[in-house]
Length: 84
Image 1 (tube, rainbow, N blue to C red):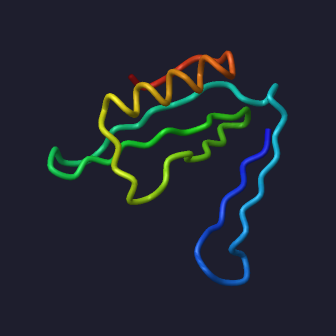
Image 2 (image 1 turned 60 degrees about the horizontal axis):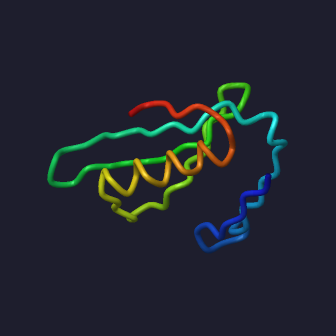
Image 3 (image 1 turned 180 degrees about the horizontal axis):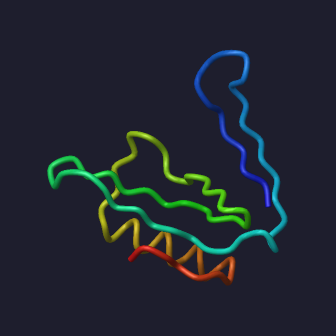
């Protein structure tokens, strides 16, 4: 599996991560924050307790959207869904 994204401008702007699908343990959903500005994040949970956020910063998704995206991803990767 490969995760690529452009980060903040600067020298180390390019983020390019590669992992074996065997290292994926679960998809995790984390819900935080006040009701008027909730923070909802989907993480890729890997062996070794590493968690990689998959949702972007400033990308507010509804609870329904988060649930749908996380469950579809967990189903596609054939891993468990945590946090809901």
